[in-house]
Amino acid sequence: MNSYLSERCYLLLDGLDGRRDFAYGLARVSVLFLLAVMPYSHNAALKYFALFGMLTAAVWLTVQRRLNVDWRSPILLAIAGLLVVLSLTAAIGTDPPDSFNELRKHFLPGILLLLLIPQVFQGQKLIHLLLSIIALTFLLRAGLTLAELGLYLPDLNAGRDEGNFIKGFSLDAGFYIPALCALLLLGGRWRWLAPLGLMMVLLVMLLVQSRTPLFAAVAAVLVMISIRSQWRSLLIFGSVMVLVSAGVWLKIPQVAERFASTFDPQIFLKALDTKNYVSGDGFSGRTPIWLGVIEITAGREVFGYGFGWKKLGQIAVKNGFVARWEAKQNDAFAKDQALYFSQPPSKVNPHNLYLQIYFESGLIGLIAYGAMLLILFWQAVRLARQTDREPAILAALVLAYLVGHVILGLANGLWIGLGPSLALVALLETVRRSEKAV
Image 1: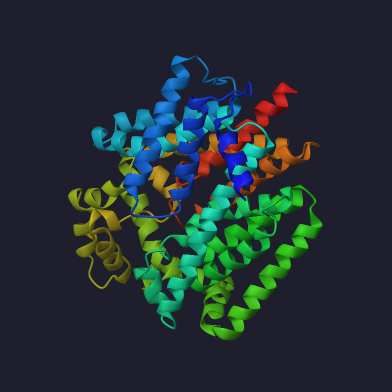
Image 2: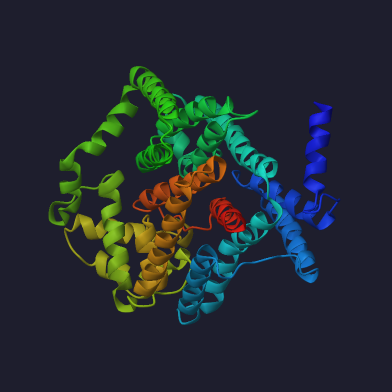
């Protein structure tokens, strides 16, 4: 064990020429530290500490002219193009200082990951270490979440609202499930953790009862395994799904009923019938929010209001939308809109990524985001189909994340850049560079 740890410590300090390189060491340690604390909330100080280390390493490598950035890369150009559009819409939005501050907070950590990882995590051992840290830290979060759910049994709904580790777990799982699958496909020391980890994560997602994230996760894994024709892994994943689902179905039937209701078309038809609207959760609870966002954005549909969703509630009140909805008599739909958009700003969000982009950056933002996703999908599919096994698996990992991301966006507002998303995109850039170097 001591020799293994010593080997990993020396590995972190190795430069490209095999000699000790403290700039590379600082970059690697800072990146891994940030990824290790990323799945947890209420640790801003630790994240800022890691961010400071990454910034220092990036400046250090830039001064030494060793931070190589391929500006002809379609991946980097896609991200850069999106940032240009978001900066433009922020500059002409209703509150430019706030929008630029939100842009900085949202994208700076991810951009540093995107620049540093392809430079300092080259080679099989370093990439395996990176993936292991990403997967293992989320497995710890899954274990803590499962324990916390046990404290709330049988009232799982209270756990969803109040739990520290429970809150946001299913959304975060979209980043980490592809990493667990990659460990399974790559093999090696930590391979045995993948089936166990998938079982634990899927169990938590079922208990938390987040339907869209679970469907997104299943679709992502199926795409990842299928594009690599890993039918044995597909059998393992299917067995895990059946075991976990059957256990939950038998022990907690109300959870099974909630998921089964997703396939009832009457629920969607009733939610879209605004004249006979009945308040509820799920799709029916989101419909007033979504149509409200469209109504609020109608006057700024080209460029939006500027980056950052927390201004949504303030604009709804300030521009008279809430008062207009409140004035409608005997209209349950408008009443729910007024109640939702009059909440504190931190609680009012679009609950749909594409409507959030529309509100923040208008049609031009939607076009830029769509173009970026198309480029990333193109690169991921192309690189996942190559014959070199390990780079292809890493590209399939990113493809799986993108599939889950697109589905999650239908009911949640998770921009790319949140969590380890740009670390995964950085792995795709690493694969692209290795292909170019051959």
